[in-house]
Image (cartoon, rainbow, N blue to C red; front, side):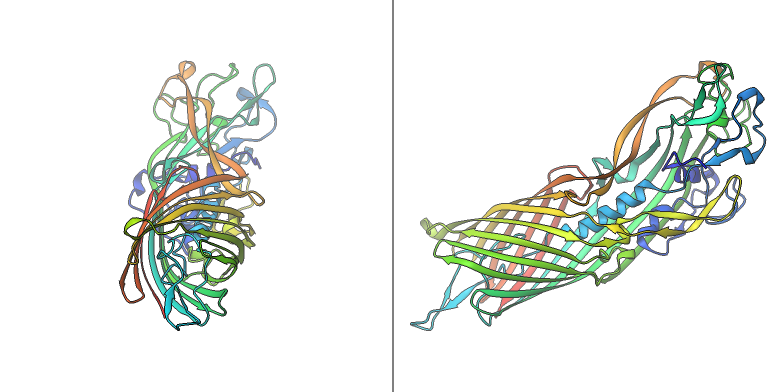
Length: 516
């Protein structure tokens, strides 16, 4: 069996899709949507042995021989690549990472007061209503209680700068086969591409509860309800081998036998490109789920507290209480120690106060299904072997995330605060994240009857990049208003600056909080 192309099983699935443009499969779990969209929805389609099978691109791997002397009509002389989707692993890891790095409203960002020991009056500790997506260095005060609620909806639209609706996976080819040229050199495979369209939504409603254990220490609990929705569609596969009959004596014979969707079955010479090109949609799949997400427990202690400065240390503990198979959680425990610094200027004219703040933290997660690989089950011994659902999963580490934030609040009196931040995440410094990258390869444009004159073209698409590390950067621009008493309304707009990884360009946040 040739272990040479990670994308072919999906590519092959669409090969037989034209008559099934409206087919749709309901995946058992959200993390299996992409591979299930690349399975046969029914029988009676070339290459689909049974519903749920994963067709593949096949290559001659019989006894070494030149093309005229090879037995190309025997299916046993053909093998397929190991059927695994690089995009599935990358998407799952990216969604899991997004769940853990989604910036949420700070649980202590509200009205903070202290009891004056002399007069007994309640006096404001901070000159502002606090930051929105970053942690302030002050605690809420001994025996104080804060209740908050925030809503965010993320619509992910691109992957490494390419639209999720128009992804194209590439097998670059270039792998040796059992076929020989006239000079007894091993002929190599040709590139192939397959299109995949994906849509991903994550919505999160979080209830926060914070309690002041002492004047300098508070603890918080975040209880999220997550709505996750993902859909996927596979379409338009092409093998760039010309018409499949370029001539057996050339170093690039364009023989269909080097890459075909129909092993041991040649296209109709000068008639069609069957087995090399299959346009249209084979299948699509989707899954939506709503449920309890991963619980967040936070502890924070203020080490330094002065009139114009506060410094705190803390830690977040994320517990895997959400269903990772449906993207409601990550499936792994994560811990994130962090530092927070808040500064304050003396009040300016009209009660304006500037309050710069800085946060830094490093999150480490355990192993999860969303960090591993998905592979279909081999259902026939072959040759050639065939694979089908169900998909088998392995666990691996989710990437670590080193995060930082710098920004400022600007208070306009005691009832209005504007906040802005720059937030950065360096993902995968220790445990990298599965990713894809753009690549190019040389092939021959499929065209009926082109023979030895087939046009050579450059083929581009996404290929596996292994586990990598990269940075992502956001801007946050928000407003907080004290409505009545200690009730605070919050609005924020999160804007993604770069195109690395899984990207949601803009995300609004709405929230309410009250301090007792």
